[in-house]
Figure 1: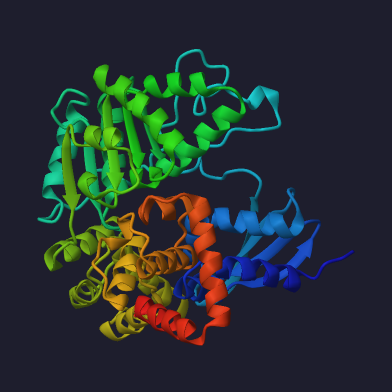
Figure 2: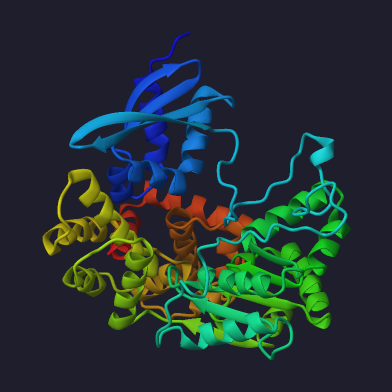
Length: 476
């Protein structure tokens, strides 16, 4: 059966659209035009080399998954890049083989263990087979250096502590170094900067960055393959271990237990541990007390929202590194209108450059205003489980911590069930995580709560009206 290239691309876009913000989809995928499909090679036309490079840098994994889903594991993607030559447009084909990685440099990429090939079923999840000496890809993005991390009042303590750790890993009082702050403020960047600095000064040291979710996945794989002891021994050999988003261990008791023993061995051996989280240790819920107490052994340093001057400095640094020129009044305008998140700040700059390139417009405050208006309009505020509990309690006039008590009063039980229902529908948290954060319940309790709320919404108009009111408040 011969498939139409437009149908294939339309099916890909449906999946891609579900995984991106509206502004990102409109900016980077609306301008793409499918051209042909021959011998399992899909050709798409992109409007500029800059556009092609950005797709390859930011969205190649998403493109790979969607196109392979449509065309099978041997699918290929070919770009036709529109080139500007003396005012005339021409196309230059570039082919990308999707099943393999194209980048050879270090990236913050996931690490996987094969299930099918016995030779690839390696005991230590990050060790390269056939090399006797422990060789670990540190999983570091080479762009996340200290030089690219702009210092300000908002992050001075954390950055200074990070430099101290990088200069003498495991030999300072900052072990573990616990970096915390809201999403998008640079926790991952700073943690990886320490790792990069250590590798530059002491190449023989074994450095590893891993997200808490990936750590948990690798642990499950180790249990499935009867390699639990090898998994533990591997991590105990790391000189500098960087665990990102450690709050994701909440509710995962076996993972917490294994990490507790790894932590103890590393600390006793004088190895350096770096942890990042969205909250300070004292505010973390769903983690064992013995683990939390160890998180407090070293230094807890927070990353705060950058002030105006720091935001300008961050934008100026990126502009300089990219070798482009933007009027200072435009930089000030962006810094004045995007205030809470460094990631959004840099995203606005990239969107502005894209709009300028694609539409051949000069970068002005007017163009910046158009881009930022779309960003702000289409950016959904992240809703946390804590925020959901706060809104539900305020709605019913209940004390803020009452959902964590063991009382069986009907109104409190129902408020707890409602909080669980919205946490499941409005966050990406697992049932066990939701339960651990709302009253220390298990996943079965959360599942029962969601069914109860759904049944009440179907049979009780007054209750349905209350649920609609709470949902509106959560989306404000």
